[in-house]
Length: 297
Length: 297
Image 1: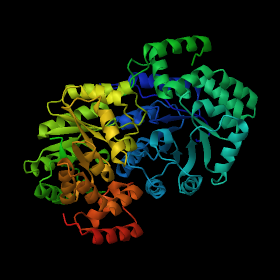
Image 2: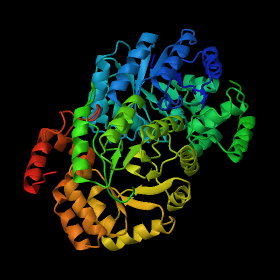
Image 3: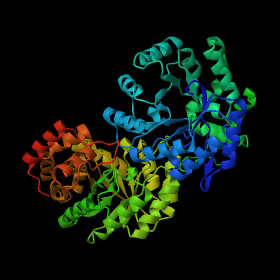
Image 4: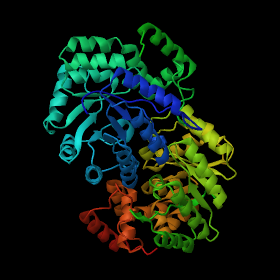
């Protein structure tokens, strides 16, 4: 399940709770497009702002509406105790896999992060994807630590942050990591702007923010790259450059949330306070981009 | 209540729950020493690893055992909704003040942080201390933002991170911030190694990690500095240099937790996983330091 396009939908919400109808609407776009997997309660799913009961509800809805597509559930939390509870909830609900980031408040050591993965994988019956995202977790994995964790039972994928922009350096980066990771553990790229180059460079999966809202174009890029049509993949991704620039400027979460709001797929606001949506100037800029890109689903 | 020594005790815990007896033991050291205030559920109190019920219980215990010393309760959380609930819990339990940090997962903007403080202070009847700690929250306040927040109703203090090590630069830093902050809002230093120089440079409070465990020496430093005996304060602080170096190396939380464990004040472990206590080598180093310093309470 950790290859191809893994689409990460928003969890639309406001201060009164989760907008379940809007969430189901987003899921239906993904199942209609037949993405390769659905990644629920990742950073784009705002997992960290929800309590255990809310996360269970989102998990249950995703599994209920997945139409046979494998569902990976984010189980990250600051405390190991809570991660174990969330893992149990996800497994009981029927998750096909789980995603775990070493989210931190106090700076974590490599030993602490390894022990976290060791403890959690011991409690699992489903495969786990390691979530490496230093911009939100503030933890930086060494390749050696990735290698050590990848040898733990149930670990089957690593979601890495962006790769270098040029293909040669990106290949070097993926090969450097691969030297520590056996081939039964896939390497998946995130940072949507780097997805085409990452897939062209040898990543087997794309853990995608935009794919959670516009799966069709993201599937095209993924299929092109994984079939070896690297120039085509690059060009399809380059077409989306105006969006990648907005991601860079405002953060991908705020941008996809604004798009979902503007397209009437969710209410407005759709993010949990203190997070605020994009301002009017950014929304106008985004509207122009959407018109010119002619994205449908 | 936001002047002098504010002592931040640990919240001793393990995977089974909070060690209430040990927590009360720590509180008694602070009330016997007559610290100026007690700061519960700060970073040293591991607030971020506890759920709402546990935080309420710690709040109630602190207020029950404070013996008339003002108690400030940490109400920080990633989501505004949760901060509002925690503020209500703290106020209902009888807190004398609250402490709020802009803890973040998605990077927050200045507008978002200002709105957080604006929303929360509207719900308050007790004074608030702004908690500025970029190493854990990953948010950096500008002085302009501090000024804007300090003008909100109920804001009465700012807990700043360490100041520069030399007195001239430290004075410059405090004066620079003070230019944005009216005198009815105190400025308190944290980062224990910088406390003496911070107080000598014009800070009115010390928000102290070590003071949560060894209040006597921290009170001495505070009293010396606030009485204008700056050389004495510096020399009392310099005496603790070996401890400050351990704080620097391992983080103040892990060090004070190890000391509390080694002195039998708490069980071992006393920190929530994934956080691990100091290893044996560090503990031996720490034991030597404690012997040479002859700290009592």
